[in-house]
Length: 223
Image (tube, rainbow, N blue to C red):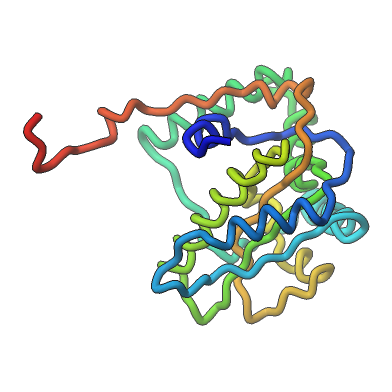
């Protein structure tokens, strides 16, 4: 697949077929993705791939924590969105909820959508990214961002869809309980991965992008 085509095609997949993803395919994706750039070739990422009973246990634990009203405890600071950034977030949410038939005042459907998020969107596999705590948050997180993109693009080559999720690691104690990721690592982000269910309404979302001219300043060019 052409790399530019892959970048344009990639989208967040929020509904998956139950068909498992072969370990061999995931290995090929990761073998390509670890070529991602990182500061001084530090390769800060640590990768944990989960499926089957382990993934089911994390799903269950996440939902139990959410249902109990437990406070989230992400190990990477949560952003606060304002102005145009908040507007983009709101526009996406409106489109998503309209496709899913979730009304503004429908608390139960909204709660079920949250539970689905905590279940890794019911994907058959997931990839969890962590970094050694000694690396801090700067360049190490940039490296994680690079490999996240690479995984999502490489997955397309095998007919797979992905969704980058921070929500699923809001309760890091649950993730650690079933994966044995040590306390010495900061759990950063996860990716739901599987074969897309194109009949799932949320997969019809088309997120907008700002035109290049509105986000780019050119310096030193003749025109």
